[in-house]
Length: 337
Image (cartoon, rainbow, N blue to C red):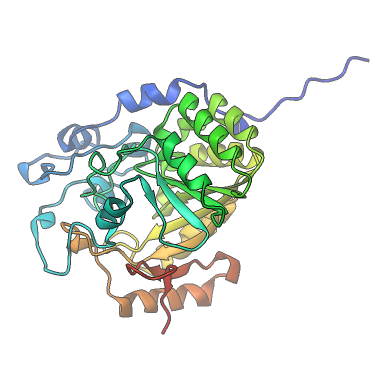
């Protein structure tokens, strides 16, 4: 009797390798075209103001036709970006000077871990981004391969964090070369990738990319960035299924944003839906004090009240740590009452 061919459910299958590039070419590059797609009136108050609009259609399709949509508010320029405050600065985490001192695209803030800027591009420009003012061209004097070799000389480093921009905007060939370089460093045990692409461009989880991941022999952690449960759908489930099959451990970090997810009900829903898609909540960040983002800011007292209500309604493994980044500290700072 002939053996039956194994049929993999469609929600477990990766996308074709070039589809994500076509999706990027079709992205919205200004707020006018985005609002027209959503059938919302445009006015000049939504102009970019120095930080360009970039949104994939995949992400825009999950938005409602409302200026109050929590996904739209993350990416639509707001006149309030012109508000200034002396505490809100271009480099709230002192990364500019850290990278300058290293003359490299390597940042080593924490013991035994190094962060590598692999790309200066994103698939979506989040208006609250803590690196929206980062001078990528100025601080990338070395190739990624040169930087990895430099990291390999420090035998104390056991985890390499790939960041950006978004590292997954590198094509499969470049990523494969980077992972091969990392594989050769025996002292690195874990590769961690921070990315928004499984959310905003799930087509990036392609056959070629998964072939690359399947050749990795180190522990692989992928931290996705999701702020609202409306960002999750069948496409993100498919992307996560594929990543888990490759052996990746999936975590999520969110940013607590005024007017978007600044209530316990929204964040409880997010934690539950992330877990439904096999992703564990990891961090809930207080927003960094980045210039042009004052309208997103949540104070510590309100954040603690939200987190306390979440704790009362979630299992412990679904409760993300409430944290903030403080320059010069050896780790994220956990916020508690």
